[in-house]
Image (cartoon, rainbow, N blue to C red; front, top):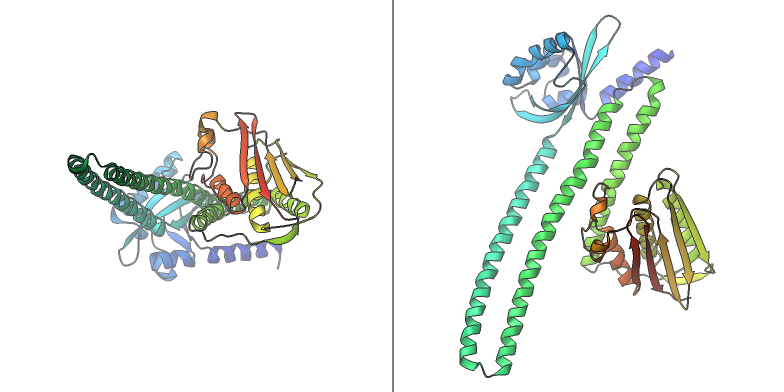
Length: 421
């Protein structure tokens, strides 16, 4: 088997195994090839599709205009979908319509031109979006309902307070009791309001943070199919790396949510074990070197700490990874991240210093709040949960966390953890 035949067989295998639908038509819109995913999606057999005009897979209003679109593209070289991609609707064999993302490319052969369409079903995404909107509406209605109920309770309490003041206004204990009730009610109302705000921020953040990497994966998958030549492997590798990065980002978001939930419910406790603190730092630095940007470097300084300690190794590692990854994220591509570890009177001291963008002074008081993100990093991906989780971890280990930051000059975090030597 020569190289050409081998390439053809490989491309055929990829074509048949593709998760998304792939349809090839000629310049007259007649379907010449279709992969199994397309047949499953439209609920036709291959024999029922091949040889027919592609308009059979479209709703009536779109199928009527399809031939005009092709002719217009031949005449002007400009198309509404070709080379662009957009969301459209398809029609299954039974007449059911469904949404999908269509990316069409023109392929010029020696004697003719064909068009290849890549079809990604959006039905599940649309259903998820609809459910998210519905859940948000229910949440808003619930907050309004609870607020109304609490307002009624407040009014009732105020009326009761007035009556009690008229009856026993000279009795100090009664007045104190009423003030306590009023304070509890206001606290309850404040907590309810905070809950509504947190859930709204969560819905907004989750929608944005999930949509961006999913869009990157979809566009990269579509673009990979364009690079059919062996010499174009670097282009394919670039988009494969984008897909891996997006999946890693999504995994990080889910891990943040799971960690926060466990921490808030008190499900994470310290499990002490004996380990070498210097070896732990080297392990973390080695792992973080894999995510450095450009010419970034991690400088690790150990100050007389090459010995065994007793503490929770896993929690300490999570704290260090979170702080160093933040330093990498918010530093430029030539930045140096300094990691210093020392032991002083049975207190392990960890310092992570970067020379990045820093934190605006007016916003530093919110740094450890859930979902907080500084105004100068809104264009960088993140959930706003990392430092909140770090603070909770430090508290579990009975430690403290402090920081110093100056805008455009960098940030230094200092962690102090009591340890048993």
